[in-house]
Amino acid sequence: MKFLLILIIILFLVSLVSATKLGISPGNLIFNGSINEKICRNITINTDYKGILIGESKWIKEVKEKKDIKDYNLNQEDLGINLDYPTEINISENNEIISVCITANKIGKYNGAIIYKTNGGYAGVGSWIEIDIKNNNKTSGSIPITGFFSGIKQNNEINSNLSLVSSIVFIMLTIMLLVLLFVYKKVIKEKI
Image (cartoon, rainbow, N blue to C red; front, side, top):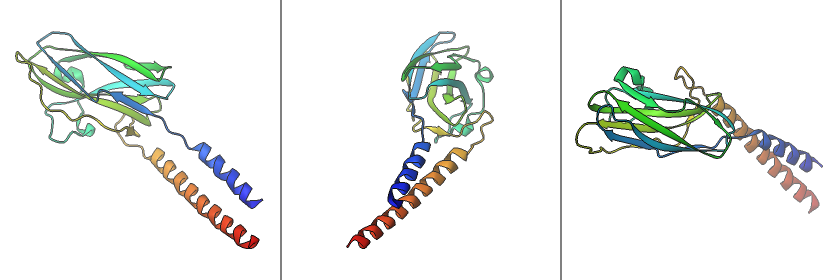
């Protein structure tokens, strides 16, 4: 009887744990062109999330060797770039194809990221953006954004509540499993 009760409790706790699958492809968007030329690329968002995704772009003046999204604190207007993309998407399908277009009003190299996150801001995904506006269209090496962002908020502070809750649930499930194994061994010993 105790075994059944423990099993029911474990199944109840497992049902409380959930995660959102959120991916983007490609991980890197490269735009090459000339001044005032409109250049478009498509990105695909793959998710099991149903609801609204909020989009934003972030930019950096000079790219560093190691890309870190926290260093990207400029907006497109600061650099004279027009990035045209949906800032709010109502997701109803598992795959959503989005058109991203740029227009730059001066020659130069620009580096940014386009980020989409769930309406609550606890899960997000992004793609690096590299723009080269000049006469010869050579591209440089790129590093894609991998994984998913956890806890991105509007003010760029990391919210660790989701990680904390997940860790606590994992610890509780581990303890429950150990208790279950202990009870199981005890029942087996009593039968022998």
